[in-house]
Every structure is written in structure tokens, then in C-alpha cells.
Length: 115
Image 1 (cartoon, rainbow, N blue to C red):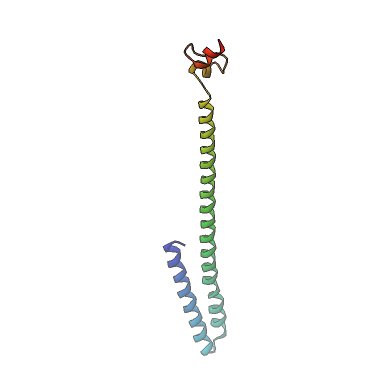
Image 2 (cartoon, rainbow, N blue to C red; image 1 turned 120 degrees about the horizontal axis):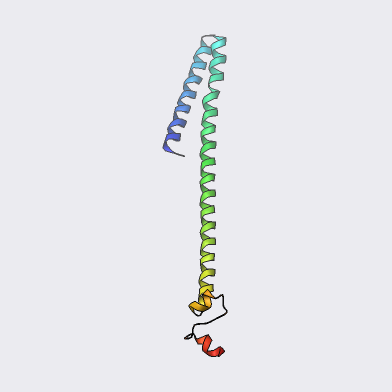
């Protein structure tokens, strides 16, 4: 959770505490409508606090998915580089590589063995 989200949660908690206090004071003064309004209003900051927590968890899950995807792409990239390096190790000369394995350079060891 970010610092800003923590500050918001603290504000939500303070607001809820104030609204609970106002509800109690209204109840002691025998004011029915203000008690109902303050009690209903005190639920709103709690909902906002829960939404902040849910947002922070969703953001952390998305970040973990992105990191996991990056690791998978990196692993696939390394595997394809290894495969390319293996293919290049089997190439014996430039002419063999450019002729798709049908011809060898005159100085190639495989050309001498084949002749």
C-alpha cells in the first residue's frame, strides 16, 4: 500500500470515529434523525477504507503477474538464444551456412573429407 493510500485510510478512520462520536452525542440529546444520519454516514468511510485495501491488493497482484510474465519471456528468450547458438555451432563454414548446407568452402574440413 502506498503512503498516500495509508494517509487516506487514516483519514477514513478519523472520519468514522468522528461520525461515531457525533452519533453518540446525538443519541444522548435524544435526536432521532441526526442519529440515523450520522450512523448511516459512518458506514461510508469504512466502505472507502475497504476499497483502498482491495485496490492495493489488486495492484500488487497485477505487479506480480507482470513480473511473472517478464520472467517467462526472459526464460523463452534465453532458450531461443541457446538454440540459435547450438545451430551456429553446427555450421562449419560461411558457404555451407549461406547455401543451406549444400556446399562447403574450399578450406573447410568437411569439404576435404567429402572429396
